[in-house]
Amino acid sequence: MDNLPGLPTLDRCAVMGVVNVTPDSFSDGGLWLDPAAAVAHGLRLTAQGADLIDVGGESTRPGARRVTEEEELRRVVPVVRELAAAGAVVSVDTMRANVAAAAVEAGARLVNDVSGGLADPGMAEVVAATGAPFVVMHWRGQSADMDSLAVYDDVVADVTAELTARVAALLAAGVKEEQLVLDPGLGFAKTSEHNWALLGRLDALTSLGRPVLVAASRKRFLGTLLANPETGELRPARQRDDATAAVSVLSARAGAWAVRVHDVAGTADAVRVVAAWQQAARRG
Image (cartoon, rainbow, N blue to C red; front, top):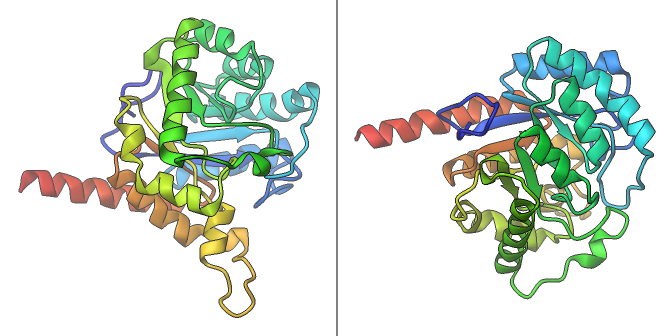
């Protein structure tokens, strides 16, 4: 895993499995809201080949309203603690500094913040103090408003520039460069065309010299691509896993550090095939 502090090192793209401890996430809301069910699901994903388990207690689907900090803590911390105690490498998906701090104390090894530290001014201080790897996602605003913010002159250049500015701000706040992972923020203030442009030019992000996380799993732009040609109806979220695995393959080949997915088994196999293929190509 690209020499991120506190994480194992792999010779292939890592797989981050998603555990949504929420009632309203876009593809599996409510399935894992019970802590015992969430822990069991996380362990199942680990057995299927996930290298990290990303636990989140707040939906960030388009239009979603925020939950209270107390509710997010109640949902997330027990699940993080149990998974970490069972040996899973746990990530916490949160925009709140206090939730990140509590989750790291409970055993989380990585903080995955879809706002890149913008939503909570205290996040940089927590990340700097814990030393945990930190995913800096490209973000322009909360889920309730983000569709109106999908305006770019050149989406690849703009996202790259805005992420570069976030990295500079985090470094100035005391976060170490070795902690940082970049995420283009697919689906967050992005149209389908924006998402495809960013995937097609993933090299613009990998060239910045930090590991890159790609989180395309089951997202709306895949549903749009696979829409019923007669009715225009989007492919349902839980029927987008084959397309997600294809994105995982292409992301791994393009140099992504990790892919974040709901359906782990197919992607876990896919990234291992990519690694074997690349190793054979290098041997000539």
